[in-house]
Length: 365
Image (cartoon, rainbow, N blue to C red; front, side, top):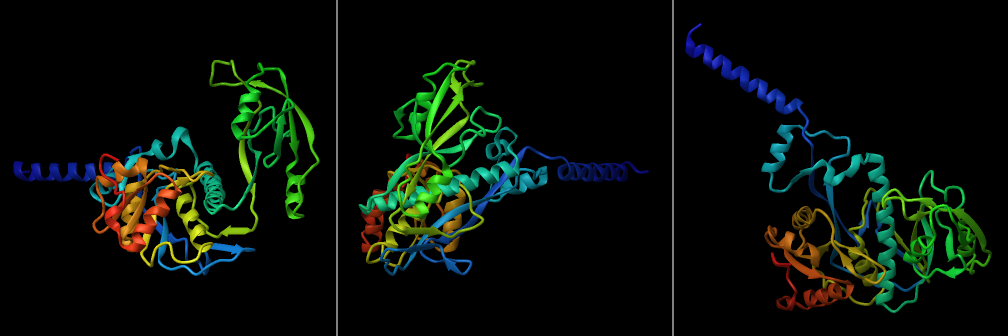
């Protein structure tokens, strides 16, 4: 065989081998890309996203779009060719697999966590909007989750209202851990609770639950502090009673990052006039009960998704501003917000046309 032909054949075979390796060999990466955006003031799958009853509502216009990020599943194994293609695509982001699914998180575990965070974000959005409007909301501390195999399993249940620990009244979720860790591992701690079923029945009947019970639990040793801290195996959270019904109808979405946009949508529907002045505003950000806006992941993908959908302005958590501003999609103005008050002020400027006063994101924050 002539040397030139042999060289060409060997090169071709090597190229084929490299291509096969690129397709067959998995790499430890995952992909993020722009996901759907939904107008919180509009409809989704044929029904309003925000449904309010028992209180006057007002017509709205324009857009207050929540944004999402589409990610590859936990069990998806990307190959080298797919990773290179993603690196070359300006509208996708390739990240280490463990960034999205740390410590071997399964698809089921990730979906469950996202669902819980999404549910909590809806509750906080309702509270933040109503507080901004001066509408009182009743709150109390509950058992949020019970760790399987922990001392609390079978003794306490998700939804139980925690009234006191060792006779000391509980006023906020952080009190629970503080009171439990006063004990040494192996000592008893007494929880005074309203059982979840009693609480649910009381809410349905629009009355205050009064039947409490004491539950004694023997603390165990934590595994993250050298065996010195006492635990019972629960996490505490907050539940609320609202003076009227607010339902958020949005399926197949998870995580906490829609909180700000839900809160603004609720506020808009409960107040006369239009928050947006007919403009297309999108955004993202977690929100807590006090209206503080927190950072989220994948902000670069969300701005691209918002721009592609037609957004003119993007409400951006202050802690995400620097990252988002490094590659701002053309035609989109990034507006820096720290809380719901900032967002409402920005919307006032947007609908009035006084956009020069908007606090815009920069690469410095």
